[in-house]
Image: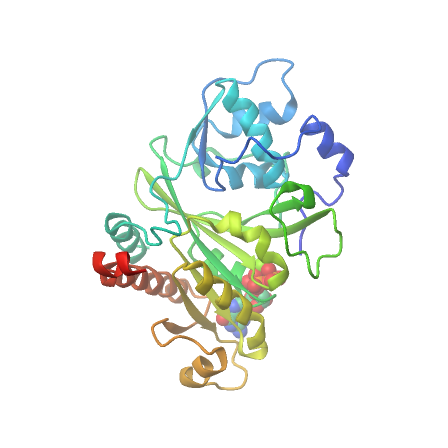
Length: 119
Length: 207
Ligand SMILES: Nc1nc2c(ncn2[C@@H]2O[C@H](COP(=O)(O)OP(=O)(O)OP(=O)(O)O)[C@@H](O)[C@H]2O)c(=O)[nH]1
Ligand SMILES: [Mg+2]
């Protein structure tokens, strides 16, 4: 199994996140689409700048993680920073299936089926 | 097989500016069963690889059996993507489905419209736990037998070996073939649609 940050020591990840662990990031789903609202500023933490460049077009949280070579957990924290300062906005998955409503809506399923048939 | 920060991100890889609704489908199964191959066959991007990590303090971890490091666990998964229309995009996650990984996937897969359990007849038992777990969660799923051309199994025998509910579709596929991988996803979407249609309001209030 490949590990994208095999050489990344826990210390380095600790520095990137400012020592915070996940907590206030509960709202960021793996497929929440994030979009940059501003350009990277000089002197900005390099990971923040990389996210702003990457997210010029909408990008899922997992894509940000893959492109930065960082675990999803760490990326959630970095994104939360940028969302808090308004540099990034989030487009959350709407009406996703849940325990109480386990099925996607008929409209969504129809859209998926049409697109799959056209693949 | 992994990307790094130094890798340039081509403009064409980005989603349309109008993209707003992301959906997900999980592809789970044992090691080497063809998860990445299936994702690659239908994805518009080369599958990307990343990791989910969780620490014991990270919350809600009550089953760490089989996990070597008690403090932090890291498991790789990969994913691909299909843009459905200017506003919607479908992500496909490929992840190992064995018991010791599920506490990581519960969050990753929550809100998934459905799941595909890939089965390899050389190691059927690798898929038992994933099937149990999806049943418990009430996540709609189908089972796809990725045929490696080993000992021939009829789908009936396989259904029995998996102790699979007759209502759960079981299909055969070749994950390397785009057309075959596409049929697997269509079978899943059709299954979810029929489940949703058969769940009348009366049944809903009865549960
Ligand atoms: N004969 C045959 N080979 C296949 C098929 N699907 C995948 N393979 C091969 O099986 C090997 C494993 O496939 P992967 O897609 O990497 O499997 P995986 O489930 O992602 O594996 P891990 O991520 O390591 O658990 C690769 O060499 C594939 O080319 C198939 O349908 N038939
Ligand atoms: Mg794989």
